[in-house]
Length: 142
Image 1 (cartoon, rainbow, N blue to C red):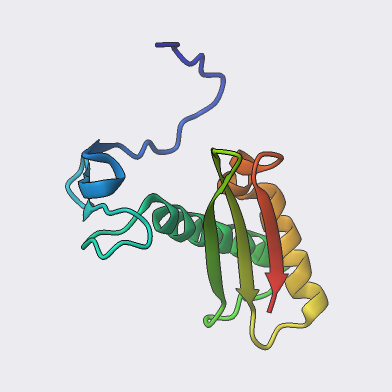
Image 2: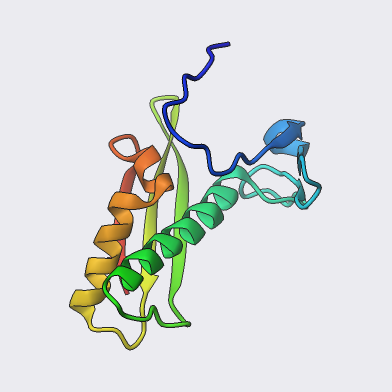
């Protein structure tokens, strides 16, 4: 295993332990605050799946990045701001890949300002950075 050389300050490390994979797995966080059952996407299994988990984490982080931009602009992000994240698990020629859409609603905010918040978040959100140039993504102001 390669050791990461740190030239930066680590703010937080999320730690989980997963067994069983997608089909009948369980993931637990090291602090005990998260314990979820996993199941295959589209199945009748009792758990969630990695695509839903990614959508939830990414949309929460993205909205946080929008909030940072709003504070810099000295405006208030509406409390009913919402993001509907859609993460598709796809297959082509036997290869799996992801594609995604973030449908962002910022009620009561001028569309130009709302778009500026989305553009800022797309450039600064760690999830967006992590998948840039690797996952096809649409950002939609709805």
